[in-house]
Structures are given as C-alpha cells and as structure tokens.
Amino acid sequence: MNVVVIGGGLAGLTVAYRLKQGGAEVKLLEASKAVGGKIGARKAGGEPFDIGANTVLESNDAIRRLIDDLGLRGEMLFASPQANARWILKRGKLLPFPDSPIAFLSTRLFSLGAKLRLLREPFIAKATREETLAEFAERRFGREILDYALNPFLVGVYAAKPEDLSARAAFKTLYELESECGSVVKGALAKAKAAKREPKSYSGKMFSFAGGIYAMIQKLSSALGASIERGAEAQDIQREDGKWRVFYAQQNEMRSIEATHVVFATPADATAALVQPLDRTLADALAAIRYSPVAQVFLCFTREEVPQPQGFGFLAPEKEERQILGAVYNSAIFPSRYQTVAFTVFLGGSRKPELVKYSDGTLIEVATSELQSILNLKARPVVESVAKWERAIPQYRVGHSEILAKVEAFEAREKTLAFAGNWRGGVSVPDTVAQAEEIARKLLAAKG
Ligand SMILES: Cc1cc2nc3c(=O)[nH]c(=O)nc-3n(C[C@H](O)[C@H](O)[C@H](O)COP(=O)(O)OP(=O)(O)OC[C@H]3O[C@@H](n4cnc5c(N)ncnc54)[C@H](O)[C@@H]3O)c2cc1C
Image 1 (cartoon, helix red, strand yellow):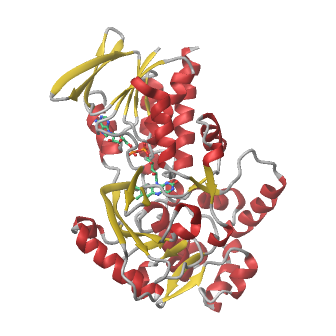
Image 2 (image 1 turned 135 degrees about the vertical axis):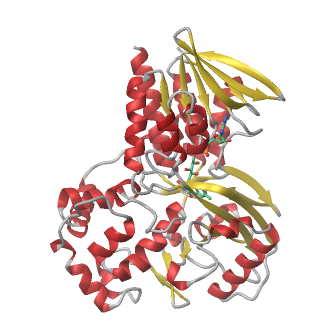
Image 3 (image 1 turned 180 degrees about the vertical axis):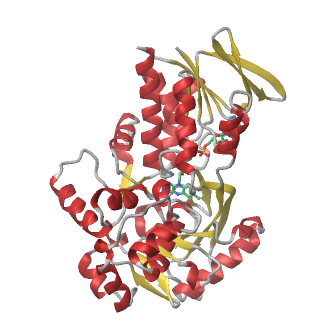
C-alpha cells in the first residue's frame, strides 16, 4: 500500500503518521514551505505567539494517544486553575460565565426572566426540521441565552454567528440532547452525573506545550521525515492502471507520483478543485462550504504597567457592538511561558469579515484600543504581532450533513480515496486528530 496524503496541516500529518506506523509507504504533499497549516508559532519580542490553535482540550482518546506516541506527555503544560473563569462582556462590563447550576441562578449575566424562561426548556417540543443554532437556541432557551451564551460561544469556536450554523452539524451535543433526551437541560445534567462515574483514559484538561501547540506539528514532521514534500502543490489526480497518479507543482516544475491510495487533507475549496475531474457534484458541494475569516493580534504589556487579569479570557456578544470578538489571556493560562502580560485578541469572523483585510497596523490599533477600553488599561503594548486568514474556520451551515453524506457515498464507492480535515468531524484540534486517526485506521484495515 502506498499512500499520497495531500495537505500537511494537523489532519494530513496525523493521517500520514498513523499510516506510516501501520506499515504503509507514505508521501505527504504540502503546498507551503512549512507544514502545520492553521497551526504555527512565532517569537514576537521574545514572547511566544501561538498562531491558530493556542489552547487544546485533552478531550478524547485519539489526542491522548497522539501526545503519548509523539513523546510529548512530559512537555505538557496544563492551564492554570486561576484561568478557569470565562468572562462575557455585558453593557461594557465583564461578567463571569456561570459554570454550575447554582452560579447560573445567582449570575447577573442573565435576567430573572431569562432564568425563568430556561425552566420551561424541558417542556418544549423537538424540532421538526433542520434549524440554525440561532433558531434552536431561541426556541429552547429564549433570546437572552442566545445573545449572551450561544452567540459568544460560537465566536469562540467557529468565529461564526449562530444564524449561519446548523444546530445538528455544528453543535451535535446540543442537538443530540434534544433528540435523545427531549430536553437539553435535563439531558446535560444526567450526562454530567453519568460522566463523573465513568473512568476516562484522558485528562479532560486544557493544555499546551512549552513550545506551544506547534510542538505537535514539529514532532509529527520529524517522525515523517523525508516522507514530506514541502512546496508541493497538488494540482490534479488521474486514474492509471487501477492506481492513482497525483500531479503536483514544485519548484516551477510539474511532477507526478503514483499511489494505490490518496487522502485529501486539504481545506474544502482546495479539495473541491482536486476532485472536480472525478465527481463534479461532490466538488460543487465541497466548494459551497464557507469559511469565516479571522485575525489574531498578539499584544504584550509589561508586568509593571498592567496587572495580570485572571481567567481564560473574554468573549464579546454581538449585541455589545464591539470591534473585536474577544481575547485570550495567554499569560494567565500558561504563566510559565511568558515574561509579560500577554493577550491574543480575535477580530473578524462572520460578524465583521471586512476587518481581516485591514493592514496589520490598523488591526493592532483597533485591538489595543478595544482591550484598553474593556480592561480599563492605560498602557501601550510593548509587543505587537498579527496573523490573519481570509479562510480560517469552516462553517457547518444548514445542509452540511448532506454534503458529508455525499463525501461518505463517494468514499464507499472509491475505496482507495479518503478525506480528512476540519470541515468534517469537528473543527477543534482533538476532533481533527480523532477523525484523521479513524481515516488511517480504516485504510489500514481495508488493506488487510
Ligand atoms: C485562528 C484559529 C484559532 C484556532 N484555535 C484553536 C484552539 O485554540 N484550539 C483548538 O482545538 N483548535 C483551534 N483551531 C482549529 C484548529 O487549529 C484547526 O481546525 C486545525 O489546525 C485544522 O487542521 P487541518 O489539517 O484540517 O487544516 P489546515 O490547517 O487548513 O491544513 C490544510 C493544509 O493543506 C495545505 N494545502 C492546501 N491546498 C493544497 C494543495 N493543493 N496541495 C498540497 N497542500 C495543500 C495547506 O497549505 C495546509 O497546510 C483554531 C483555528 C484557527 C484558524
């Protein structure tokens, strides 16, 4: 079995690593000069700027296994217990998001009316059609919970608006609690109780590494060694004598490579272009997956000028009409990594996609003045750095499940082709790893 994996982001690297471990001959083609895709690392003024993913939850067996197999367990940094609080901006003030039923009853984040409205949730009938997350949340929990819980939460995960995402595809847990238990509140409480009794092999904790999440990319890349072709952009794939031939551009030359199996681990638009000659309907469906744009602005202040705020960070609900989506308190979460008081401010998303087109200087100014106003700071940052993507995070919109059904039907037909990447199976690092591992396992199992 020799496999060409196209795309060297986390998904492609994980599939390739697991395939190689399983005895397959692997070649990974990555269009850029560096692997990692949306995960990167940069030093800015001596401080570590995590590009893309900055905190990851050890929330499934696949991520636990990958950390262990890459020998990264000893380098893990767990989030400081002081960083548990998540803040939500309401009328210009930061309020802690309630993390228990008792905290919910006493919070000032939601009015008495919103709390009473939630008591009605168990009696609300199930949906009869696919809904957006906004429709789902407003129907089950009421407008205020939509505006001050779901809306900021979705910005934190998808940089999206609840009006744009499908409840079933983007927030499966919520959707399943309704469809299986009839009530999200009752179902969540019962599941939380059951989960406490169930022993788990993974910590369930938020982590990074001394070298940032990028440490995973570095380890995967060294394990794959010469199997990786950098600066190799796949452009076409053709059938040839019962096998595949993948054509790619590298150093201004068109090259090709033969494979028994091909894994597409590219973003949806790139995947669409590659499968176009093989299945036009599938290509059109993949091309319809939209992405939200995101800009990350890394700002550090001296400890003398700015006291370290406690907590994980804050999110700004859309109703607050701010220029930023929220901020992560990097140095509160992983104090040992920083000499300064460090923040990553997020801008853009589906709310304000135009911001990502602004110059780095403008983004720094907007992020700084918003942070100063929200956290009541007078100081100027001593470190500033920007990363941005016009297509950052795939949006699981209404109809996404039908797109995935087309992908699965294609895979069932073409057993030597497979698809990985965060446009299926979840956008987080642990979800991406779990799905990539599963794809490698299936291919190896089919080989026999
Ligand atoms: C701003 C931001 C913050 C995030 N924060 C977190 C977080 O804190 N925690 C968390 O769990 N997750 C986070 N995520 C999500 C997570 O980082 C991503 O979902 C994950 O890294 C995606 O990996 P991927 O391999 O699916 O895609 P990508 O990283 O997009 O990789 C695709 C690769 O394919 C390559 N490629 C494209 N076309 C071709 C071609 N024709 N030939 C060859 N190669 C090609 C690209 O260059 C790229 O390297 C964040 C994402 C973003 C954007």
